Length: 145
Image (spheres, rainbow, N blue to C red):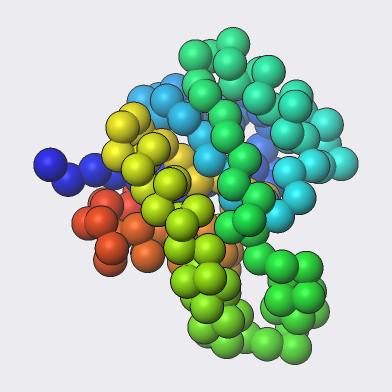
């Protein structure tokens, strides 16, 4: 059986917009892949997000170790390295955290899941690399919201 994994970024979205999108896609669990799951927008900080999603029957779990290390992210965001270069370095980070990725994959196979972080555009975000790895390793079909 082929499983799907969704990806989403909350940049420029309200919590209500995000929740409606998740509900409309049948998502049952959110895997927060930010290194530091806090936000200046309080509704997207870990504890508030967990509480709010539970009201919609959506389970929340942070996977902070899958977020890019601070220095790696800073080099990419400042333009020192391209997304291609970031992807290569981040892939090594994923390999070093293979046990955590495997756990995420096991959970994603149980219920419709979404990888969530800040960036709205998945093409320049580390969650696309995680999703691609899930597709390669486990045959997940990736749907970017």
